[in-house]
Amino acid sequence: MKWIDAHCHVGKGLMNGMEEEELLEQMDRYAIETAVIVPWDQAIAVHNREGNDYVRRLTEKHPDRFAAFCTVNPWFGDQALDELERCAKSGMSGLKLHPVYQGYQLTDPFILPVIEKAVSYGLPIYIATGTPVSSLPMALSYVADLYPEGVFIQGHFGFPDFWIDAVPSVQKSGNIYIDTAYNMLTSIENAIELFGAERVIFSTDSPYLSIQHETGKLLDLEITEEQRRMIGYDNMKKLLSRGGR
Image (cartoon, rainbow, N blue to C red; front, side):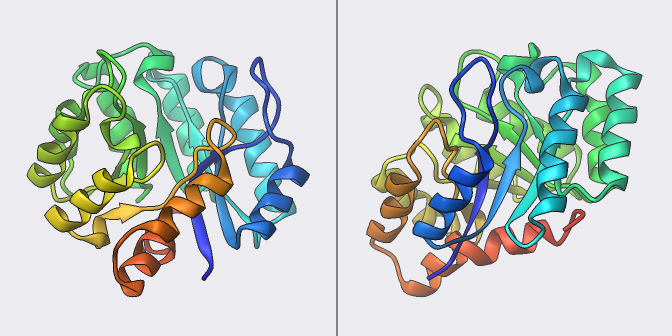
């Protein structure tokens, strides 16, 4: 079975990273057809343009293996909007926001122009959740309800601190998907039972997490093979078709 990894990082930063050749080697080893690569480290918080250009260049170099989500920090105002427009027009496939690293609450009004522009381009929006107090799952539900035509990915499904809030937030808002990274098998299986495999997507968040472990976890889920294929491939393939890929 082949997979799409919906969220991982590549390149060096202040933290130890994974270079492109190592990532490609691991993708081949664990049957990952496509990896969605996103900026990380300082590129998330401050150096957005440099990080976006780096992952975009990798998608141009390996168009059959990588798709890229861009990031912008809403604190930069019009500069962030211009950068998001540039990335969308260059064919990038989605937007990653990280309230903790970027320093805001999801309920802060000044982030909404960024959300609105991403939605206008049809970009799925990946938002990291689970860390106090900026990344509350119910706050993501609030944003998702403001833009019912948008698609949102609840990164980490509220892990580690707000996983209890994560379930009702997804039940409340039908345009939120969750990803599998960090979460236990029982949490993922419970989510599938409550709101269906069609709203769950596979990701590794490597190099923070092991690609071997995260793919193994997907294989160990007590679900049907059709559900496994939806989570591991079909659902993210559909989301990528909304953006530039």
